[in-house]
Image 1 (cartoon, rainbow, N blue to C red):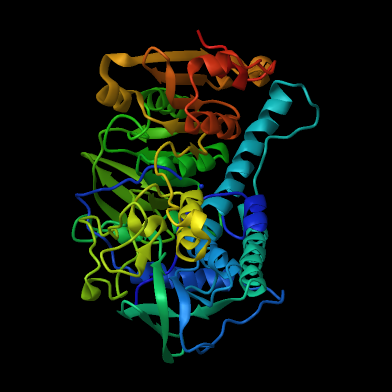
Image 2: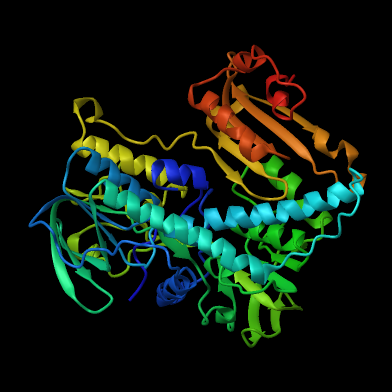
Length: 527
């Protein structure tokens, strides 16, 4: 049985606690690679559940329907499903949520953004400890040595606490939580199969599919030995830090994992099919990050195709690529993700999927079948936790809220996102090529390259680059894109994303007094 109820994405613990839900970037696809069996992910979730066990009190899910009919059922207990079900419950509706994995929160909480951001902090601390000693002359600061094996259970325990927060929030708002595999048997009914084999059926007026996605691993038929590697989920299973690691992929997940391993001292190889990372991002981000990663020690194998992998799991692996070989201790595939739709009964009901396997929806999250909706990664647009959350809440507003919400929907334009690379990236709006394609000669570019003040006391060889780009259009110079890389870019972007969403003009930024000395002030002083 495949994992079909886990939602993917990013965010912060504070965001989780406040809103009961929990960040990511453009979807990466690899058309030349076939999907590996889906049961691997289902098996991994059971492994994760063992890692996250603790003595803390946790409420049990119900084991049978508590109502003859519900107003609303959410299939999937990740960011989107939890947010949508809780919002609907606030309107006094009878709500059921179904999740197949042992832990609520989806990919973001369990094997995604939250534990990933924690590992980014670990890597960032390692860099700053080196700067403290070499640049800022703190005495007695040794070369950082990270104890991966000791840190992992501490990180996992924190994630388990978040799982409990999710479950407690559902209980407080009277969302009925069912643990099991869901299969739609009609547009208004869902069969739940529990882990012990027990089956029962829930009935509802409205059903939302919020089952998320999972990492793609190449088929053994395409790349022999591919199964000797793991994926981004498996990164969090690692009990110890590999001495040598290979990561395949050029997207944000690959870049982030490579940055963590490299900063913590692993010999890090990154295999990419072209000559730059982050190829769906603005060119200035690609052109800045790719050489900097190489400068810091990441061995990027460009224009590379993996032919086969040899060895045994847990031992030395030999990667054959483009006429060469590379030996590593760990291989991680980060080549993209695909939707969890297998076994849900969607095709039988006439719910269409696109060629990537994503559920097709309209601007209001409606599928082809009345009363059935899809939100989050499973519908293939803007694979970000806050997107799933917002889409889920707005859907519940429209279905169950007051008249003012009758046309509530999420706009998928100007969605901000960040990459936790080294240095971090923030981006919102159109890239430069997209802007020229849409607006032609009316496009104007402002940009600035500099070094953050923090690096003034750090050796030249370790001064991270900072590059800011502003894309504007028309005589009024409306801001249609902001793309930044450098220290603190992940935090800087949020406020400027608000400005872009509001239709800010370049003169609005010019009229804003700069905060000095900061990196962010560059965006209001560009000439």
